[in-house]
Image (cartoon, rainbow, N blue to C red; front, top):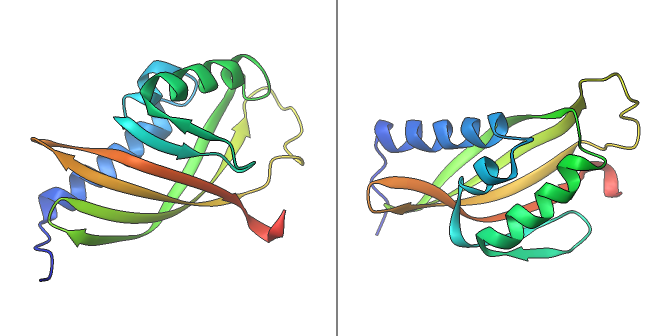
Length: 134
């Protein structure tokens, strides 16, 4: 069975992705882009499970190394696995707004699983991997 893809669904997922980028720096707004039980795998292999852990983890980084930064990203592909589940592959990096060096901030590729819940799309899973084998 192949998924029926609508322009509205793809647009809603692209809007969700942009909202995730735009909410960088606000742990609660960022976590609201995810399902309450989302699995969020960070580049170091740590797993944040669920909304509370995503908020707690991002509150720490937004006051530490990621303070005064923004998340830049671009979707490479969206593939609908079913009518209610889509896989995104995207590239991104953190840009520092206070001119700190970003040499240590490697660009990353990440995968996101979007899931339709009732009348909206949210991310149910995220995995972040630095490019270049780092």
